Length: 395
Image (cartoon, rainbow, N blue to C red):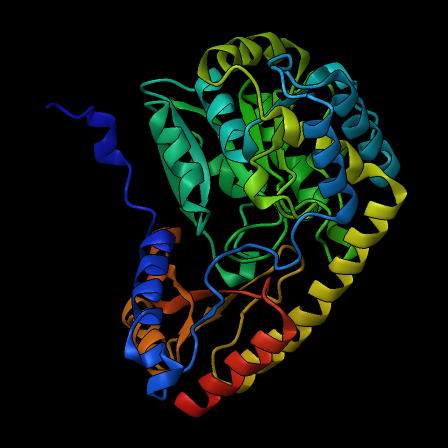
């Protein structure tokens, strides 16, 4: 059987490879209490420990009970698109026409749709290094090429307009950014983001921005959407999700905010690729925007901020500092070079010796991945405290 050559450009998702190894160790004697072991603590996956809010779960139950499970429009429930538009105005002061919003089967489907609609063979897309690995693989799946531009702690592990402009080539068709970022938890300053949009506008190209951690900001300076610095007719695509701020990880529900000219092409792709996002999840997501739910999400954001402060301080004491304090999401990108020259081996060693699962930098790019590891503080404070104690003892 011949496998499509595009698979040659798509690497394994090493985050999940590490997760598999962590589960194997968790099933061994090292983690068996009956044999003196202790349970694995998973700080390797970015999944909030809170789960869907109570009103969201109740709304899902009502939808199932009432039989509201038929296909929706490929663009999503009109009522949900309206609620999302209202959230942008209420939270960020940005007016977005609901017709520009397309509900998707998770942010992953949104990125796939955006890349399929915008890029093709021979195109190049500028991206920061480090970055979330799947994003560059969505570009590869569209037969385009992701061009990774190295970043440093000095630039907050983010691109700036000067770097984007200098790297622009004859085959460049756009930039794919993330703010706040996975794995670094850092955001692009809104003024700098406006300048990057200006560069893509000047080239008549697209600027796709992964904003799935929008809402999870701990510094008001960065708590803005790219839509606040872009004109409605700019070729700017915002990708968002109900997974992170709204805590609906397994529901696989996200959305895109598109320029008007892109809505119909994306709708056509969605109709053919997956018909529509989960109907039950869409009905449930309507409850995300109730005042009671928003209050719960804000309480959780405050708790993540508390966890961030604890983790950043603890990592510094462990001589694994985060060179840039994360201002959003729930990740710390830590420098482990004081302990090891290879973060991959180091993380596997910590899984075996401390029973703490972390993610090595290998997944996130080519820019010094052996120096860094990613820690997710989406786990409970109890688990974070135990993990830091274990690492202190181990190191």
